[in-house]
Image 1 (tube, rainbow, N blue to C red):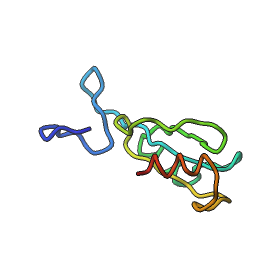
Image 2 (image 1 turned 90 degrees about the horizontal axis):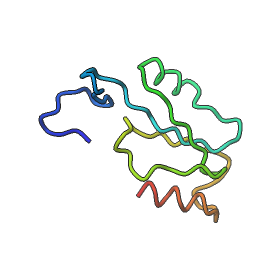
Image 3 (image 1 turned 180 degrees about the vertical axis):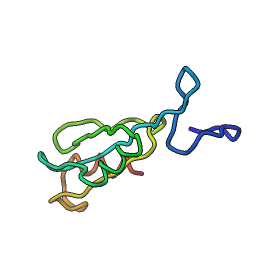
Image 4 (image 1 turned 45 degrees about the vertical axis):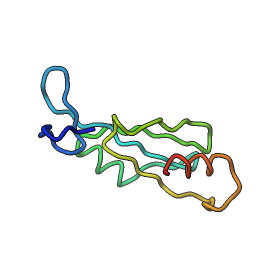
Length: 95
């Protein structure tokens, strides 16, 4: 979280040596072979590490996004209206 007097660029954190470093981006995928594709390539090119999670296969989502530049949730074969535990957890997490 940025303080009002913090002049670092959005999506960047301050390291212990005083340099800016790109914060990771949380990537949420729903298929066993899914990848972040071009989006992931673009984020990596900007210096952001990727934290890839697959809740459908049991990966937990972080409690907060305090240490992330952002989050991207990709789609999948399921519907947001499906009666699946992981979908309810994701919807609750988004809220």
